[in-house]
Length: 206
View 1 (cartoon, rainbow, N blue to C red):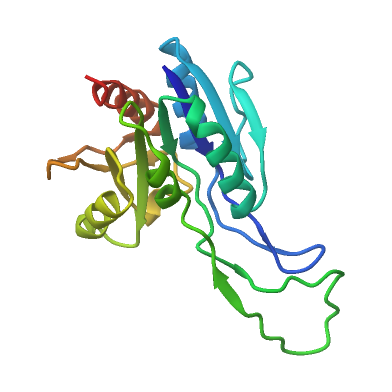
View 2 (cartoon, rainbow, N blue to C red):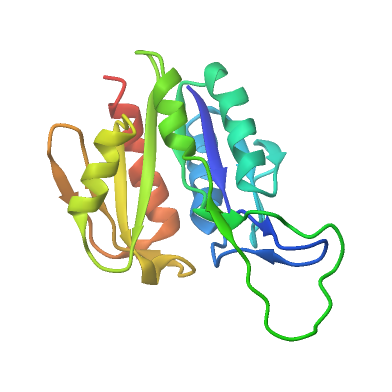
């Protein structure tokens, strides 16, 4: 297969030196790239801010903002069979970033606007021969929310995972499928889970 994986956390500029970001390390995405490459699959990683190395055998595209991530995904997806959207993409960004550095002079107010939904856009151009996998990071175990995202974004599989696993070495996911199946998995190392997830991704093409 030709596998496309997104990694890390996007950064949305406030001014020329500051940004809004998140705590995603990119650890799971790096493990997914390793698993895909070990399976003999051609692998492309679109990487925002990551704190771990990405396998050099993968083709790597570096981005910073959610807009850059969206452009890269929509450009690359047509040439791939599988998209695993594991990056933590910002839901909001400053509406009007300052051109220079904002100097300290007292309280300031920053107006935010929603970013574009990358997976929803991908769902509108997905071919019948392609598969998409998303992640739903939740502050509590709320598989209903993840199931709603699965349908709204035309996903073939979504991984619901608790907020506590975002920067952890382990994960306790629930896999949710379009037919309503829910597959809770035990706590496991992210490298182990990456192998489990890739095997299930392959099954999506059966």
